[in-house]
Amino acid sequence: MIVLARTVVPAAVKGAEVTITVEARPHREAYLAAMSNAPTAVTIIAVGGRHGPVAQTVSAISSVSADPPTLLACVNRRSPLFQAAASVGYFSVSVLAARQTGVSDTFAGRADRPYDFGAASWRVGTTGAPLLQGAVATFECVLAESIEAATHTILLGRVLTSASEDGDPLVYHGRTYGTFTRTERNAR
Image 1 (cartoon, rainbow, N blue to C red):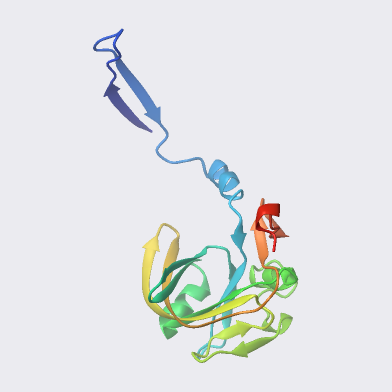
Image 2: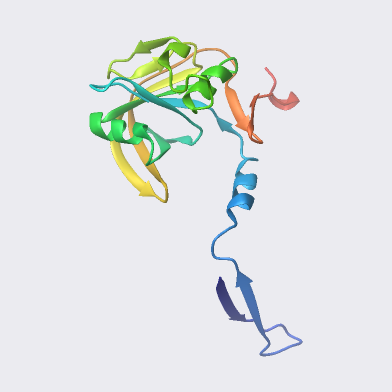
């Protein structure tokens, strides 16, 4: 618990002191509930290499810059994916289509055969990283930097190739899958 004290001097009460109490660490469940209201794209981060392909469903990715093209992905340090990406120096990002919920569950470890590459069709990119067939967007990245942050590592990837296909992306919101709906103003 952090206690902040400040002096407030309204015109009517000179010299009044107010103590504000702030919880230093947000309650984990409240934080998770609030974050579940932030919709995210569902992606699979994958790495090839001498030990075979490794992939995991990840919802924390973001564009960093278009000049040069750079993105970030947050990966739990306990995940074999983190060690594999650090070892080979590259990774891919596949943004899942709305019809790929089963693939997402497989690489989130929530399927009868978790992390099974036979659950989907893949192609090998120029770096050797697997790219999911039917994804609405794919990126191949060279690992430019990794930054430790709490339980995760932020992978900064310099994008070597990117591609997109028509289709609706798979979205995660409120701890469930969904799709994006255009509003009337933005409808095509």
